[in-house]
Image (cartoon, rainbow, N blue to C red; front, side, top):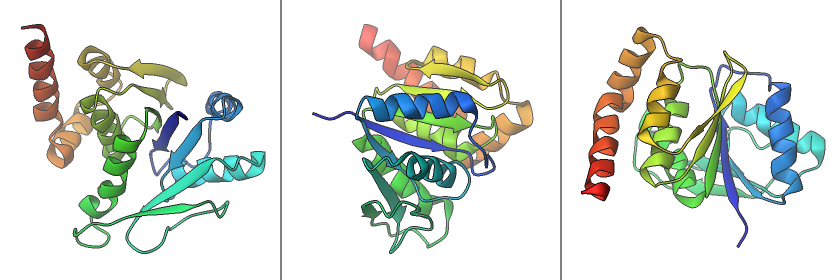
Length: 186
């Protein structure tokens, strides 16, 4: 079975760091299948890089009728959702589906984006690992446990954490993951 990598990131990151490009080259060299979203920012930057490299093993996921970006004219998977078009829940539907489908995630994060953080949480909830490139520190972090997640959150300002809690119920979800971990060892 072919490994599927869910690649996503912050919409306000418009340029991929050279370290991320090396990871993408490694993913392609291993013939992994890439699942990517259709948003501006990291999604479209990933698409541009894949197109430039002639990588064909990619699928673009979108919520609704058609993708906002599909630079390489790759196959499109449309995720049906009943959420209001254009709402956070509308676009999150495709991310949740990609987390379900993927074996691992590669996230490029600005330390603020709740969408990217939500993807890490979705993968972790499904007991799947993600590798997060923290754009601010230009370093990768492997997230496969609640402890790893809490270490990742040290990169966030208190204000960003509060916003994440309002938008995606960050603290409740961490508590649920901790509780689940405790139950596994009980």
